[in-house]
Amino acid sequence: MPMHAQELEDLLRESFPDAKIVVEGDDGVHMSAMVVDESFRSMNRVQQQRAVYAALKGKMDGPNGALHALALTTKAPD
Amino acid sequence: MTDANARIDETVKANDVVLFMKGTKSMPQCGFSNRVAGVLNYMGVDYLDVNVLSDDAIRQGIKDYSDWPTIPQLYVKGEFVGGCDIITEMTLSGELDKLLEDNGVTYDKDAAEKIREANKG
Image 1: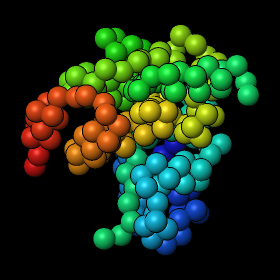
Image 2: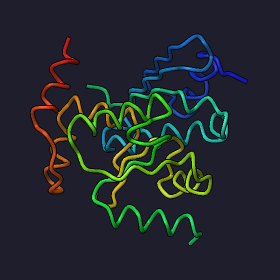
Image 3: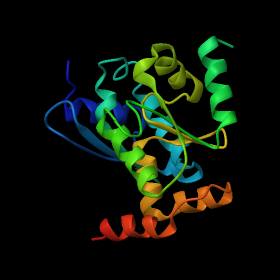
């Protein structure tokens, strides 16, 4: 079942309460999410994105999980 | 270590640059894989393409091996570099050039510049 932008944002909010989160994509399948969080400051890109994928674990992955089509951008606040 | 894990480990250590992807470098079968393979092809990087669609054990095994849930996955000198988003960002920022240089992997610098030029603005 496709996931909607709001659901994804809520999921991310659970793990990143203080982050700036922008989720786009209304076809429920192809979505983009940007997460800007202080916790990313000490992490490189792979670690940042692993943290976000960990937050979505089990909710989006799996062969037909929507995770496949999630374009992800992560960074620490400037 | 599972068989798939061992095979993956061996592959990424035996080849300087490995791209686990859907399809092959000449026939990618997914937009994200196509983008990364396209960048590497355009930059003249010599890499081994592993088609995860033809081997389910590898397709699942690679996600466990790198603790990364999506395909494609790029490895340079046995190290996981990233998926499509990260490679795109690194290409545009020039970090991919630096990573290849630091690891003695030859590539076409002008081609990399052209990619950045084309994506300006």
